[in-house]
Amino acid sequence: MGCNIILLVCRLSLEKNIETLIKALKQISNKNVFLSIVGKGDQKSYLKELVKKLIYAISTTLGIPRLY
Image (cartoon, rainbow, N blue to C red):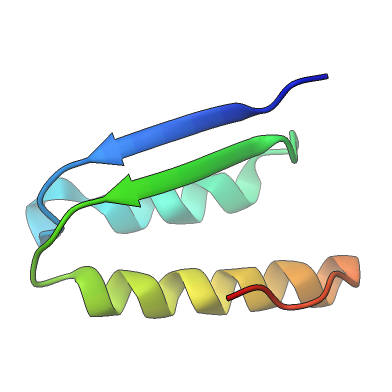
């Protein structure tokens, strides 16, 4: 079975609502879905920290080593 990649290329700003997309991925039952975000903007640091927190939460729940 292959994987599905969601590619988001945009300015990393609040009005793009990227946080919702990142949080929605946590709810997807198919673990072969990956999100790749490409861009610059004032939300970059915040989004990176959000992803780190969610990866930690998911890996802790599933017993998977942390990824960075």
